[in-house]
Amino acid sequence: MAITDAPPLAAVDAALTHGRASGVTELVQPSRPTLAIVKQNVAIAVGLKSAIVVTTVTGTTGPWVAILADTGATALLTLTQLRLLAPHR
Image (cartoon, rainbow, N blue to C red; front, top):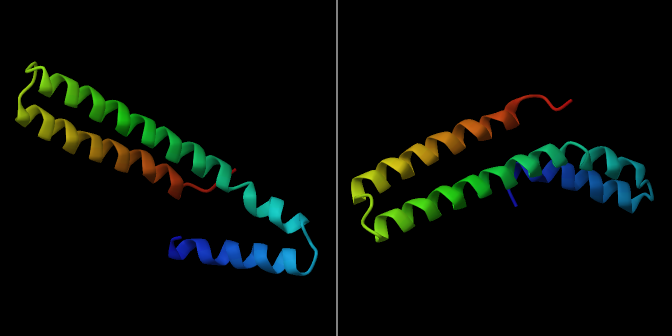
């Protein structure tokens, strides 16, 4: 659990304690786009890593290409994570 998870979890806990489940749905709505972006990033990372491992093991690419691909994947995934900073609609 991250530090930023504490306020929503406290709000959900308070809503459930006081029998107000309607507040929970308002807190879950913004998490859906976040979860979608995280799933996309995991899929991209696993796909890129798998492709580079296969091509490096078969000798198609050298270790420097693998290093550059890893660095590029990190930069790409960091940029896609920046979408989380945009306000949710």
